[in-house]
Length: 225
Ligand SMILES: Nc1ncnc2c1ncn2[C@@H]1O[C@H](COP(=O)(O)OP(=O)(O)OP(=O)(O)O)[C@@H](O)[C@H]1O
Image (tube, protein in one colour):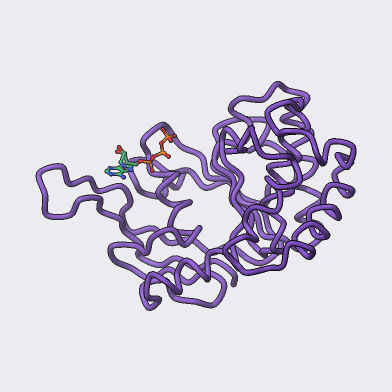
């Protein structure tokens, strides 16, 4: 099991006046090579759950094992290292740096890993080719189309060959055509053995045939219908 959460809770600002219980007693298992959609209303806890799966922070209580490591056991420095090796993130607005070139944006996650400039360029070029955007390699990322931007964001999430891909509302700012293209690429990645978790309330995502399971979160709990 690549992702295994049992009895996971997350409380922000614990013990303070602004304490928020964002997740309660979450049990979730995701097998390698499967694709899961997290669904639920705004504020239900989807992003918090993604952050725990994404090794951004450990749960307040409960057990979270991501890629064979138990998060609570990892000191901060190792948590960061584990995250970089294990998780590829695709953000809602793709978080692309507009002044950097497309190639540099894709290679960015390799910078803190001490990968040589030559190797960074090589790996980014491979992905540019795979996603048919080689002709945009040296364009500032702020000057490419929405569809190209989407492929740049996906390429960046794959640059370190991470086994888990997480996406937070990836289609929120995309039209239907690009949303479908996004899911097609996710399906291809799943077919190569990637494990994918997408937080979304877009039917184009959760009704897509490549989604193995949809998990509904409500008030920080998994809702069983
Ligand atoms: N850093 C934080 N500090 C305090 N409270 C937080 C923090 N992040 C989220 N919360 C609270 O935790 C709860 C769950 O938030 P979360 O962002 O996980 O929900 P969500 O389902 O992703 O919402 P959305 O769809 O609007 O992004 C909310 O009540 C939110 O206000």
